[in-house]
Length: 343
Image (tube, rainbow, N blue to C red; front, side, top):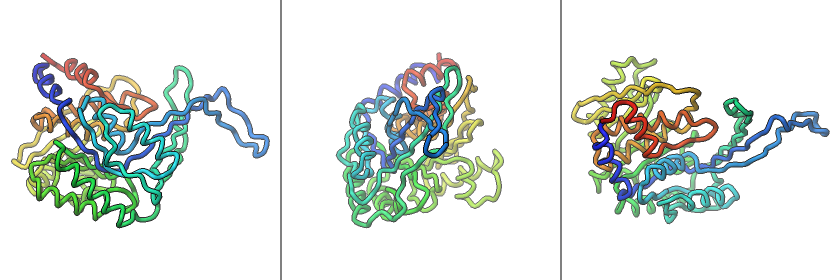
């Protein structure tokens, strides 16, 4: 990609309005100094002394963080937080981000705020080491009333945005934001606004999702298409292409160290190899950076291959940020794009 094309795409970002529908989490990092370790007099167990606490939006909030880093003009989170301390922290963190509007983020006493609590051991001149995580989740179904409110918020934002990103983050079906009722609402929106760009990603797979742009990894593609075992490169290409033709929408497949593949409804398939590793890596957040960059680029007028190239560079930026769920800014992506052959 030459510099003129790169600039032509990203200069549209401040004019975009993008909604993010999904499970908003709080990522709370507990930074531990091992030199201050003690032993509990009461239990005889090791005590990890926390010297700093960092909190930032996670889950669908990671996509928001990446959209902010890209300079998207208006970002509309659609989801919920609980009436708890974590909900206050998460809402406050989102509110501080440039361009983010919280009019459609619901606060409810019926749900806990989804929280990943990550103890992180930090030693000088060593990569961070994450200890066993402590998670706060919801284990009961999201109420029909709250689901209805979410659908109403989604319909409201769909009337004005350039794109919607959907992230289903929960492991237990029907306990988060992206329930069957919400998917039915999303399907109605696709029927009413067939040209609206909607990209979806789900850790439980996209089976049952309406015909929107699908983004997934190779294992999720295999599960969705019913092909047993690990797919070969040729099988991935064929399965993605068939799915894109079936849905009439682009399909994007992340291939870890091998890069990314995109398939269009026309039958066109494009592949972008991963950029070289430049040291220690941490893959947390890379997939969300891909979702944000694919959507932003496509909404800004990029072709499928151009969007793949930008998302691939963003993922490379993120995996080299250790001890945090990182983001990729326009200058950071530009640097990698140009290093790979920008004219």
